[in-house]
Image (tube, rainbow, N blue to C red; front, side, top):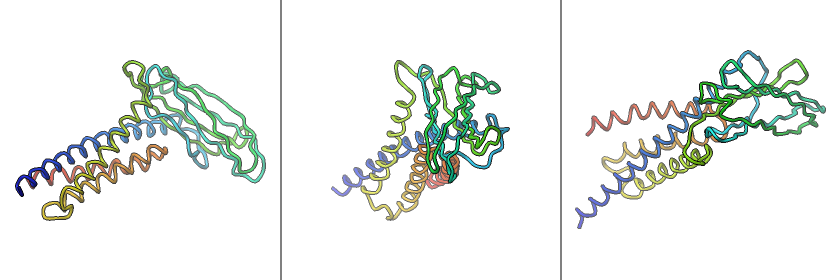
Length: 247
């Protein structure tokens, strides 16, 4: 009976590790895709020097080749006087050195804010797969004060599948598999018992960092997401060889 119970526990823990590996791999792919798109967007139209950055500026991470996406930015008047702000938006137009410019003028009361939207399609993509957008806010007609940028990966998807549907499906699978793997591992045996301490630390540490990275990219903090991504890579580079050698 004891042997049968031990065999069941081993199978459950192997299943937990399998779920964790699949969820972690998906999470790393999503974080990496977001970092790539947003980092490239910072290099697009990089000549304008400003005092600060716009947060949040939002883009869908994935867009199908037949889909219309929306870039948005929250523009705020942080002054104690009403102001008319000029918002100039640059979007790639099928090539890295070509851009589409849209200019908006908005009047805001002190402390007020307004969210602006701009449509993008696959025709805007540079390199055939990457849309980059940069939003610049001018306090007057000539002096830029804030800017923000974001990137969108364009993919050919089957049927009527849209980019946001694919992204959120993969996102939920990743989070569910990571959390399920961690939970099954924790509940099917002594997590800090003999032979389990290092594995438990590895699963909790790596899983926690990837989950943080997934949270960061949702809110547009790609720099923090990049930090989580590189820490995850380093942990993976340490953990995998260690357990292979141990075996």
